Length: 391
Image (cartoon, rainbow, N blue to C red; front, side, top):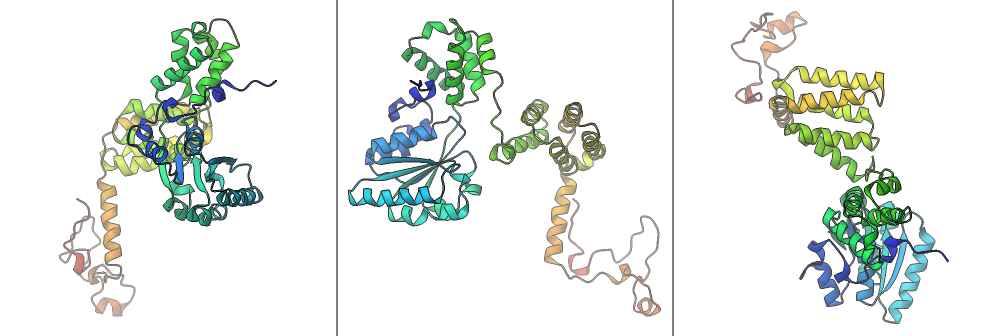
């Protein structure tokens, strides 16, 4: 007989058993109120893997005495959804609620998501969608407007340790794992309870006494929770840029290391450093742009992993540099003026004079081809001649 994985055996069955997510489960918070009022609403649960999305959906269904139907957007198609809707109609006639849980709901396309709308609106089904991606970009607006978006946080290290100790107690193996091994398991989990329990189960099967060395062998290397097209991709690059902007070299190098470790395209990183060098360092360090451009060329010509050193070198220099957004701010003001005054006549003294007639009309009058020449009438069109762009 196949053994149920430890993570599944440890799955909570009531809200009181859930560890973490106190902002949703505390007294008076939304999930407590849903259960207390016995009135489920459609939800989008947005959070990282192992934060409890599926567990919470199952508990809600159980607590409100609804039939729980679970599908994955990765493997389910139109026919399966149609059959579920028909089954929900039968439940409706029997006065039984139906909660449809769609894992990875962001994988459904717009048309597939649209299909849920009339049934959510009529109350035929209560939809609970789980996603690791930002619902603002991945879930259609009509569905978002009919649902509550709840954000789940990664479990803290202490919460993971509590889960591990609870599992060991229930398995009667508390003495089989050293405190340092428990701490290491929590460290490796990245806030994912499923990963922590999976690694614990593997470790317990490798020896009578689980130590950090046993854990390391069992866990190998945790795959970073980083999708190059997902939300984490944008969060990490955003943190990288903001750390450079704030002059925090340590944070800059940490986020850079995370991207490289996750297999991010080094040319993407180098391109962002080029933009940063001009936008955020600008006139405070004119050599920064050239340094960033050289980094991009090095990445192209040398390749990885050797060019990692170049990326760390240049990122350190950019983070350490003085910052100035003077030219960037001037650019924004110039663009705004150009939109406000797109057809302002070019002053006569600045116009091109290819013919005698134009010269007679005053084109180019009194303009001298000299460096630093200041024309008495200035250079901006009359209607914006007093506007300041470069401050």
